[in-house]
Length: 530
Image 1 (tube, rainbow, N blue to C red):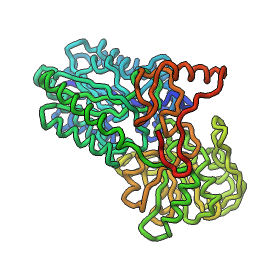
Image 2: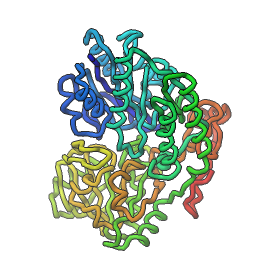
Image 3: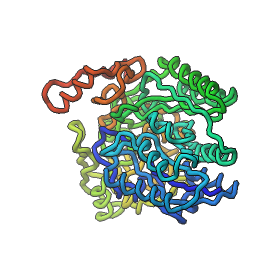
Image 4: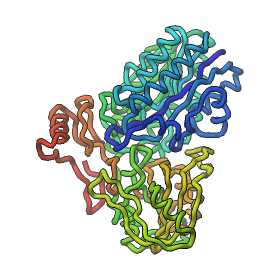
């Protein structure tokens, strides 16, 4: 079988401060940097990505693969028009130039928004379909956080979503999508498909399949397949996207329409019934540090890990806010470490003064947040690094990261890793490369919401979710949406989106009236209230 392979991945936070341009895709930011043609097979040989799994299937089935282009960038605001058009045009041109094809495999995300397009994946699929015609099957591997449009689903012949969050099954998902493609190519048939939209959003940290609510729902997908579906996917949706298709969907494929409908109804009903199970607890920075300090005497059962969820670069954060760093310093804790703080100037200053030196630093801070300022302090330069590391944990799955000039700085009993480039703190090696042994710390603060769990949970005494100021609000109800479908609940058992809320958000943006009052956190108990 002659099959074209291509990928274009971006998870778009339409409220984030900076866009994804061509340079962001060239660098990758935790993904494989942009790669083309014959360089693709080797680039994906030992990493955890959908394209990796598809190449494994291609090797096993002796496909004649035509690799075109793969590009992925760390989550941020919209993909620039220029980047979207350049990358998509190169993919489509490569597919047209490939000649006769039996199939197309696409590795996409599902929540891409460009400057000029709300539905990035739908437009990519449309152009690929125009290039290959109606008879060539197209199969797609997608992220669990996809905001899936009916237009996108109509164009492709099969799509498969991740079933784990942290996403330790990205390569496995690519395998599943490729095997569905093989069935379609061999039989010349297309499965029936069904889609159901569900009624509420879930905050990112509590979408984790390591937790009971989501874990139970994703376990149910195998049951749906055992009872007749060829493939069943649950997309939780990426909630920080102000687009009409934002939100959860169940998507199924089967030999008959009846079987596809039955499986989709089953998944959707289970999701609706689980709404109250997604309620959980979060903490202010001071509360999180105080609780962690009480729980984690050094050397006793591992560190307490605190997720700095509102500055998670995996959801559009900048990995530079200082609320959690301040809380650690002010609490005068010992044996604590935080990472990553992206600050090229601080990193370069450390390299200039040298290891072992004490110097004055201005660390981090995000100018777009009124409640966030750099931490100005003397610090000791504990270690220096070029930022190159091999991330071997289950999430990155062997990816080689380049964080640029980096350093470990010590402020009292707190170590902070500063880097020049951004990547989500989701691997123990991202502490070790800077000389910090994570297992020996009492407290670890990570700029991540969930992916860190894959590598950190086995060493953690406990995991806490903190809500320090950051560009990615924990609660979707705190976002100024204007385009969502009416009636969608913005959090479990939470407020409903409608015309009045959209109008208020538009007025707030223009500065014409006072901000709408969204529901807040119960600061005394740190509980997510609705």
